[in-house]
Amino acid sequence: MAGRLVSETLTKLSQMGDVTLHEPAGDSPQTERKRRSRKQEFNLNDCVAHLSTPRGPKPVMKSMMTTACERNCNYCVFRAGRAKTKRVTFAPDEMASAFETLERSRKVDGLFLSSGIIKGSVTTQDKIIDTADIIRNKQRYRGYIHLKIMPGIEYDQLYRSMQLADRVSINLEAPTSERLAALAPKKIFIEELVQMLQWAQQIRQDHRHEKLASSVTQFVVGAVGDTDLELLSMSDKLYSQAKLARVYYSAFGPVPGTPFEDLPATEAIREFRLYQSSFLLRDYQWDVEELPFLPHGNLRADVDPKQAWADEHLLRQPIEVMSAERELLLRIPGVGPIGANAIISARRRGTLSELLHLKQIGIRNPQKVAKYILLNGRQPARQLRLF
Image (tube, rainbow, N blue to C red; front, side, top):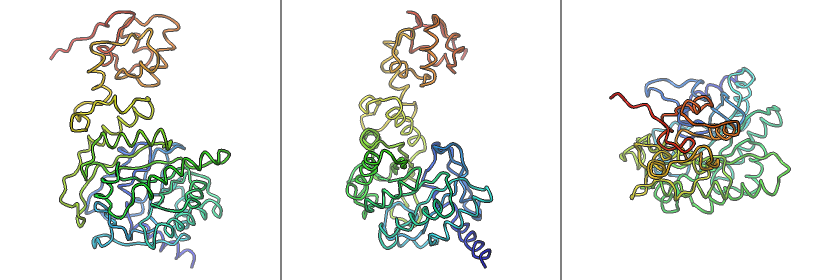
């Protein structure tokens, strides 16, 4: 009997397919996103994503407690009333059992768990918590768990979720109240979403002795007129005030059977430029005002933001590699944290006077760097293009 129930649960799980396709969960979201044929049948492998997690690369089971939802977000495949969506629901013990089976057979080593909202956010979050509680405390699983936080849940629910998980997602979806109203009419920007992110940071501060989940968020890009300036300004606030681990950007794609089905898709390059800029804010301590926005508030698509800034500032005033502080070295296109550390270490031992020296210490493309720097007071000689 038990074996038959497990088999039925796995069959139901496979029927859901890659339901979390549009919910990034790893640290390399653009490369982790699956591409599949529309005619291809779903199978159990669609529920497994190979993600870069804070615990390293892992095969992670990605699923939802239910694909039914009472909310009517204009862009969402699971919105209330969409007839084309297959509605599948799991009880906490069913979902936990499915995970245990896959984990014991070594097909997965991690869980990302989301849900549609049925009977309110509080009830839905309780089911997510109950599932994670079974996995942690009954099954004794100590690996990676990433939980979705429903909008407007209770403080104690968020706290418990953070105790059980390594990471929690609290998705703003939009950068302002006005944009969210156009995107998801039933969601409340401050009370249901921003407050959750603020609570998460407060919980970490109030319980420093506990191992608690980091928090992340996601924006849907380009559906309701949002600009890169709006998205990155909010991202910067969240990095500094809510101490987010990262921000995800999901380029809008129209879903048949939704109010936004006829809107144009957002180009993938815009999503990519947002990620590049977000990392400059988070890892390089740039200010939003320093990013090279065009007059309409978006970034250039044809060049990465770091190079666009350097073309405007460093071509006229190149950086002296032998004396620049680390923060300034990180402004050079082609020089990241590892490269900046290598430069500082190498110049303690001698003089960097030619591009070959940069190559020898690990700078991958010295030719890219050349026009933005001085080496011991001189602009380095560059190899001319033949064509």
